[in-house]
Image (cartoon, rainbow, N blue to C red; front, top):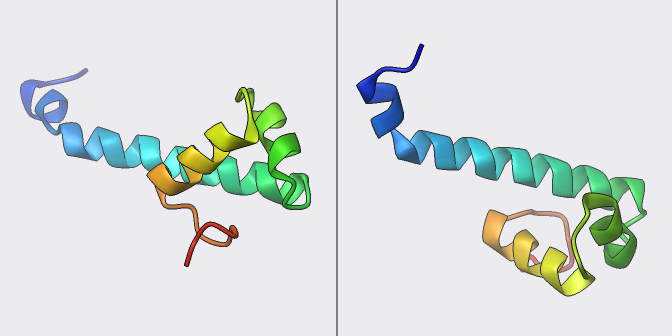
Length: 67
């Protein structure tokens, strides 16, 4: 059951969402051999550009976007 404090801890929820997104993006890139177009399709994203935005937004490391 949810209580006031657990609902109020929004930053915890955001981190859980970010961690899941990083995990799924990383897995898709590995399965697709780093091909971002194929990984985006696997994730149900409209394009590799959207995937690039998600990579930046969620801080996925190991892609060519990180510097």
